[in-house]
Length: 175
Image (cartoon, rainbow, N blue to C red; front, top):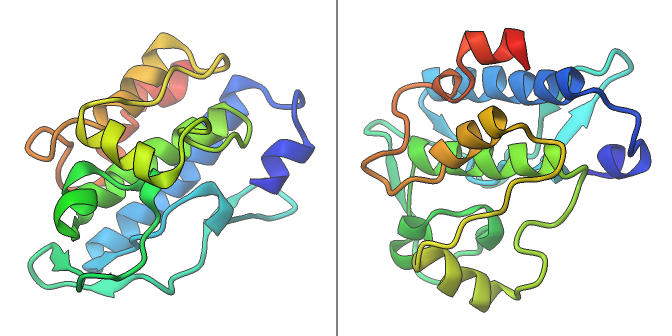
């Protein structure tokens, strides 16, 4: 996130998309190995000298056999990156990582802004569970925002299997 803030104004839309694609591929790999990250956010990504983004901070990650993990009550989790089923029932799945990926895309295209910046965590929980979603960042095209938004559907409609379903190839080439 610091990288995005410190280099504001220096990115082309294709570079922002490439950052998201790097994260997408990393998350696809984690999912293929049956891991839930549970804390995907720009603050947990590293950028090397070539501009390649690496996902880091696996402190909350879990190995799952059935694509679902229910945390115990009182467990800490990143509210602003969490879908309604996590906020309400503490149920994590690959779909909650897809949701967080959409929020990460929003962070990238807003150049490091805090999601739901005008709300505290309680207000964020209330708004998200009532259907409020993040606005389209100025640097995100309508097509890119549609991809972000598809990550924030209700649990039954969130893309399944891999995160690459959030970044279709034609989008990657044309954005």
